[in-house]
Image 1 (cartoon, rainbow, N blue to C red):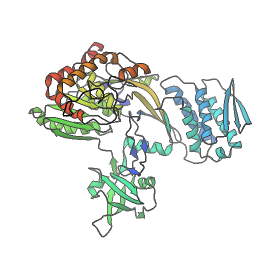
Image 2 (image 1 turned 30 degrees about the vertical axis):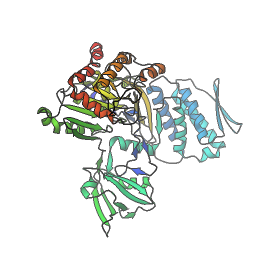
Image 3 (image 1 turned 90 degrees about the vertical axis):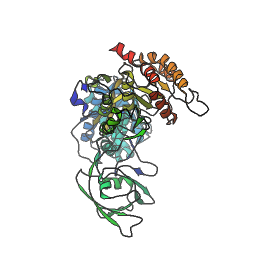
Image 4 (image 1 turned 60 degrees about the horizontal axis):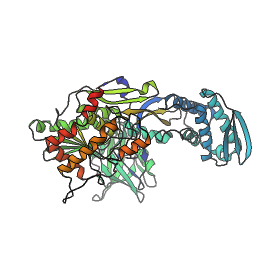
Length: 549
């Protein structure tokens, strides 16, 4: 794989896994908040870390100065579209109403005024727009004046003030730009990079901490832990009364560190004392099976071991591929929200010998990158069908678009989600994270995936196709939908950055469906087993790239 700067790839995430706690407090992998497997997950480039400040709940102007200054600098410098620091500051200060609804910030002419309950507090001269330092100073002045008059603001913790102001700065930016406080940022980093854990999924019900599942090849599996075991003690301390975060914190630790837990097992009268060493825990994202003469590989997300997982499964199949027992591959990316950029590129590179995989373009010089295939096709041209749906996003779309545009695979399903922006993640001095959209990525044929997504070659949207008496899609119907999508394919690729109306018109040809359509696999098998049909469908993509290159 060839890229403009190989060192930059190592730290480039496409998606930060957002965290949520399930209504039943379900936590996977022994200490990792449940991944929000939604296509709203954003592409990320883990880029910068600044020197930290001491972690204290008390607000300090000195500490706040570094936090706000870093925020202003990075947003003005890196956001995909030009922004004015004055707008950021006004929106940020205006958002202090999240702490005290009685506060009012007004910006008129060259002055900013602050009042509370209609009572004037102070007026401040607005600096020139390009001076982030002076705007930082003004931000601090307004907050200090507000703290003198507002009990709510005076009693607010530092993190609450940071959250209000920086979240306010981002309000007029795109929905993928966001702020995560120090605690959330720590969880985000753990889910991106892996963490020291034991490899279990837990659930708290009626104050009992139970193991829901045990990941394969983890300390938990090797120690003999089982699903439905109840954890009663961690390091000799009872877990009764702990919330899910407290349990998670006790299970996590440095890789290689020792952990003692006590579990109760239904068929054991005595508690079991289990000793483990924490290891790097990275979720299993790849599964596979054989469907008669066709290999099926499903990828649920893209983490640091996804590409190697796909490669390992294919290598096990190579003897059967060489013998002709396996005649095609289904790569299932349905409802896959994305993941790491290097993994998306590496997976596409497994099946391509050369050509562009994806490029990114933005305002900051470092945001402009291109990623090329430069390896052998691991399955030597074996026919591929890629399955997508309306929840296939970001990294999934990179793989699908690359294989489609390079004429290497036929895409089956509905329009994908259309997540085509790249985010830059900055760690601020308070150990929080600022996530900024800083570029768009483009498919090999040149169109942006943002808003558009990937157009399938064969549309299986239930409102757009007819099925026969057995509720199946016939070969003739597949040929018909290929003809329909062919008519819009060229127009689709001509829209480098389309407007909303154009996007809606193009996507109406095969509207996104979020659910998994069971017929997709049957359609894929029919395409793979009829070579003429496969070649016809595949040829729709290649000419556009051939002309472009």
